Length: 130
Image 1 (cartoon, helix red, strand yellow):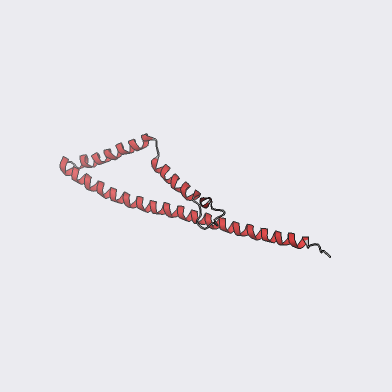
Image 2: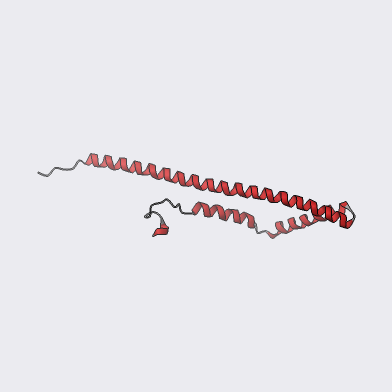
């Protein structure tokens, strides 16, 4: 007549499939996290190198301008002091403005990277495709 299916085999297979599914999801999550961390590190490294190059360019431009002003003022002290005063005033303006626009910009880039949807998700799990 009618034979009852083997329930222990069914639940055993279901358990194995569930474990395999969770392992694959864990690996996918790890890969996505590593990709995002790598992108953040790359952005920060590129930003650091760009800032360093900008700093050296600004340094040499400042030295050139200080020498030029020294000749105009006929005083080496006046030329270099005027550049130093300019940077002190600029520093005071940046500190007193209170809105850390560079910090916000970096934070926004990191948040955008972290919450960016991964392109490799299946269509039923990617909310952009719904």
